[in-house]
Image (cartoon, rainbow over all chains, first blue to last red; front, side, top):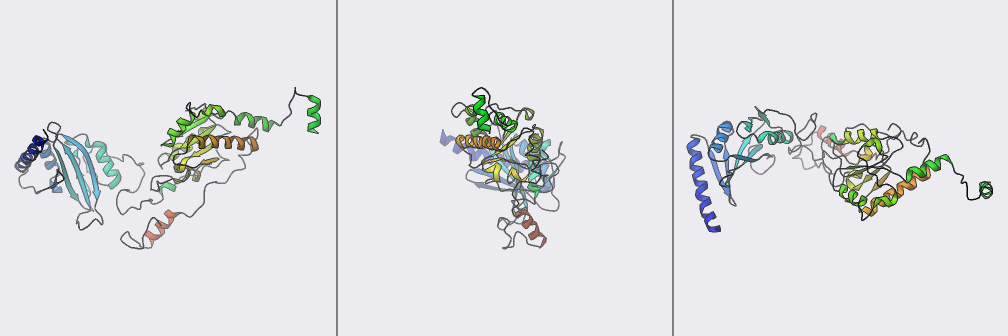
Length: 176
Length: 200
């Protein structure tokens, strides 16, 4: 049984690869493999087209949507990386699709039109990295207070913050 | 003089001050408000459960309405989004009231020295007893309640006038490290600068 799955998995991912090349003519897809995980890096200009093609290729669930700040990370040119972790529920096949993004234009189209589960995930990415998702049905911060000024998971934000945790009135004993 | 009167009255009548009588009653029937936000809350539950049994010390009546409580037990880390809630609940509790800061996180922020976690609730509200530990054992929490009972019995007044004197903030006034970060940023130190160390 174990042999069967290891034999069938690569062929399955090869089918998906050829199907995606069919669906996305002229879009640069960089494929790579790491410890059995398949990743694809696609161009940021074709985001919604790519996501729709991934869905058409059978990836019907968005398991996670997150981002990475690559500031001072090795020899990379791009600042942000938006990561879509996809799952084909029927076959169990997974795909990690990535897209690079740079300042100052941090606006990308929302994935909620493709997978509605992207709703809170995109709000969290905006909360932590400041990446704006255009076309989101309810776009605001998810975890932090609405009046929070910074995006704390950016690498140029100090880990202790900029004094937000000390910005409260002091209740003394006599007035309480 | 008091002994002389006591001798004449015998065992039937006890003389005391009104303050001492009120404090005795208050100390032995503390009603805790469990503000449990993290793993200290589990130890707090264990303290009230049958094995350690907080009711032996007269403070087992946990109430989830602040209007019915006079002891706030802050068990766990308090983040910047939760602190206004904590202060509001504290202000809703009727006088006289006391506060136990339970665990390293509530006392100092603990290991969570980050942008979101308040570095000790005593910076923003009064605290009577601190319980160290991560999380503290139930015995430590019982000890803190016994200490608080001693504190109430020794200094309590019937109209709670001892609280009126505490008009100054009682939290730590140590050097603000966040201010240091802001000064360094104003002077042009950036993250790639080796001298920039936001931690120290």
